[in-house]
Image (cartoon, rainbow, N blue to C red):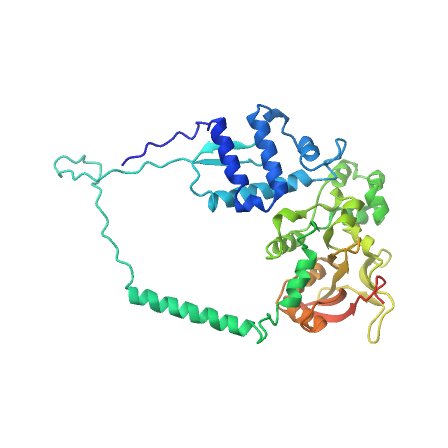
Length: 437
């Protein structure tokens, strides 16, 4: 039977659109996310009622996400971040539960107006007709039926299934203790579940690298008060830099290393895309940091929000402007610890430091994570350790198979003659109380 292709330009009727929307919203994918479901329902109903021109970020923020009408979209990117998750969730729906839907719903990038269109149906060929060679056109080949390929014998399939089953049982036996609890993963699972808490939102915040450039050009380090009030924008630009100053002040630069860390974190199985947002440091507010879990990437020089957590622990990553050195301050050092660790960056040897700080959230209800270093190399070393095979072993050491306490960790990152960095744990502190002592 031959199926006539449907023209892609045709638009489904309003009734067809509504029926599709109902099926999507009642699916398992959207049933677990009321926020994305409300977002999708609002923009679809507005478009169906002829108000597509009013579907704008400010209006979505106020109607769907409860923001005040005067809220600043530059400081609160809730709509943009949720739109990204919505597009991903729609793609997943039409690849799984909705793979047989005749109509597809998309939200194109750069817009919040939904689009409905029919799937393009490929024409199905009818029975092949045998054309005598004398009647076949000279420039066309005669289609031939492909020989039927026989699958593997049934006995082979059964043998393969048995091997797979035995392998799975063996792996499970090696990973599970006699009491039925995973021996290696429990502290690690709790650690990541406390950062990406299913009951709270988590903000992943890469560094604002332009701050380091401004610091280098003006000789003035931008602290948290100057950053939150945007006072640094009034700094006097250096001579002969006026034409670039405005672009630098308004730019949103972050390092490729930070973006790789963000990408690796997003792949963690504990991450729920509907409750995780990637935010540029300059777009945040103090209230958001206090109300959510956060993953802050970089030192306070490039990510001033780190300063909010100075009440926890004793490790501080800093910069000595006079000596032009990146350093780590160890307040109240313990036995065998130094009060100061200075990055070495000569031609023959590069010794940097990475810091991981697993801390209570600012409201004390959950946990947050700070990953930084004295330089790009230090931050990368901290992230590689955090996401590498040695980190679960470290957590097990702290937790003894249970729940790991909050801690701060100092790593060295050494590079000799251009070889890859080798990380070493210098020390760690368990944080028993807010002061970390």
